[in-house]
Length: 288
Image (tube, rainbow, N blue to C red):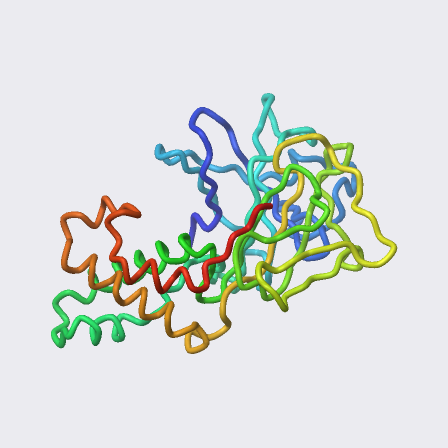
């Protein structure tokens, strides 16, 4: 398995990845160990994993197979000089759940209905179009998710903020839990925020992340994407997704199946009225 690390970024740059474990230690490839940054006088040049440009504004790299199974943060940095440096700017962040030999697929969109359910709605019994139906079922779910500002099947979501809002309202609902919050301190170092600093509210939508009693947000560097919030959103089981959402996805699948030539040009005005009516019942608005 290879190319587990992927980052979309503009062409003409040199990117590399830094891998951290859940306690913030960095992976040292030569020593095959996680350690505190700077141990033994080491710096970015000792920790970097080079990424290769694919030609489609995407950079890819291999996750180190010497790393044990677990969940890891992958920081992507943009190299400014001739070699990686501790002061290089941040280009992105993602997380990988690692089996010990392959990425498990955290963050991938799951369809709100199964291919079998879509075929039942379409009244199709043959298997000739199964691949196509699976593809449009996923596309329909993705469109409906974006329209509602929701996640259907539980997955990891990452939000970025230029500062700490008074209350952080994650952009996707329903919020299940917060995995972690990182921020760039005034020295430009990506720092894990202690979970004791904030409380998480999931009983209403959109969910909220607010300061715990007698706590304050830390000072941050004045920069874009200075705060990175990683959280779990969606319904844990597909069976828990509201029926009106499932039916809207089915209607959308039917629309795409019957209008194949127009499927690549879906606009809000071309969506069947019933889809928007059903989705509007639980559409969330987030002004953060």
